[in-house]
Image (tube, rainbow, N blue to C red; front, side):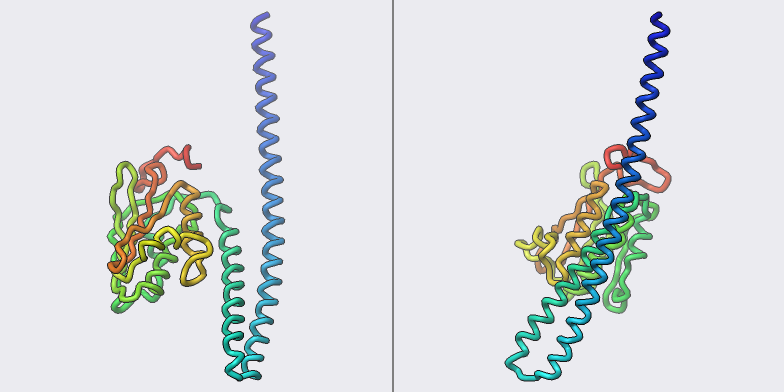
Length: 255
């Protein structure tokens, strides 16, 4: 009798596991379909807005030529700033839409830097890559965008910058990727503000997006440079999402 009850219990348990698995599959399928529809709608909406924005910019240029009166120049300037801002916001929504869409993968740090390298890093502006070979991080593929954005900001706003350097150091159990330059640096009162989504000299979205991309697998980024002596971004990688080539770590906490 006890043996029969055990068999029945196992059958019921198996049935429950099967239906739970099927429910999860159905839920994931429905969620995927909903996400695709939302992405399609947002893409169409973004395209329509950008089309109208192009028309607005065209009329702006035509009016500026027809009304050269200096009393109107201040209004034209504000109109130009507003249209540029709208364009930046639309680009931001497109980039933000891509975050977390694909499963994180192991990526070689050297390859990430090579893929992100800017053409402007030439001549007197040096890129010194002291990162060790064979090191990989488990992250969203958009981590390339993170490094590109750091390089872009350094080139744009570094002032007297001559060198960008990447290196690796240990901080307790967690390795830290250090991205630093010898430019003007970040004022003390702006070190956290630069990661806000409405702050920045350019679009204001680059570092906000960078932090979001890294956070997917628990990676963090801070700015710890000394004002006047260069920017220093420290990307702390949890031990579980960092490895030497061929070494496998437990990713259960992060995936």
